[in-house]
Amino acid sequence: MTISYGKSSLHAKFPFGYLGATSYCDETYDFISLPYSLRAKSILNFDFSINNENKEIYDKIVEYGRHLESDDIAPSHGIFLLGDVGIGKTHLCSTLFITALRFADNAKFVGQVELSRIIRSVNSFSGGSKKEYETCMECTVLMIDDLGYGVSSQSKELVQEHMFELMNARISDRKLTFMTTNLSFESLEEILGIPTIDRISEICQAMVITGKSFRKNGGRT
Ligand SMILES: Nc1ncnc2c1ncn2[C@@H]1O[C@H](COP(=O)(O)OP(=O)(O)OP(=O)(O)O)[C@@H](O)[C@H]1O
Ligand SMILES: [Mg+2]
Image (cartoon, rainbow, N blue to C red; front, side, top):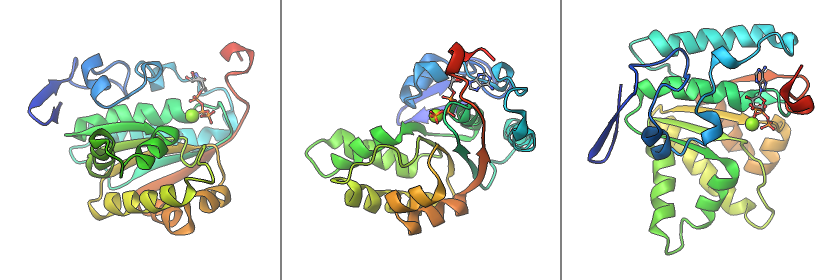
């Protein structure tokens, strides 16, 4: 698998791993802004026995991941994971995102807080932010973590406008998009606007998982 960024071409450390699991070199992860804490996440280090009420959804996620890993063509939709805090949405979704990099010639990971910052400075003199925003619209594989989180009332209108534009761009080119949130659909509609949230269903399969936070008790069950 090769990810090209302008003139540079970065090769995977291994052809591709079993649903993520340190498949790429740090240089690639730096390019796509994947946080260090997510680089070693994989299906292999996710304990599916916790919050077992999600079994059916877990099975669907793993099946989707297996297709991502072995199919010749990219799937037509990404995954949108919703649900309670600390139950592994970002862990599972970034595993899928990493696996999907085999279809990517450019990719980006962005949290909503960072995306809102990029949007706020998109029209400023900062060319960097404009480029980052364009990458979010154009890249083959995008992951937005914590969708809708931390949007202030002052920037809500601006964020709504750009998130709408972003989703439209991703739909029109059928780009692969992954997302997580711990907000409900109702809250998301209030924060980002109904048309934007409606468009998400066109590019992502939404799945809701529930349970107790893994962060409690230092991650021990
Ligand atoms: N079932 C699990 N097995 C192993 N590790 C887990 C599991 N669930 C969560 N974790 C770990 O717990 C931490 C929190 O998980 P994660 O960040 O994915 O939760 P989240 O659902 O995205 O939470 P939030 O809604 O707060 O963003 C991470 O380090 C993750 O790897
Ligand atoms: Mg998360």
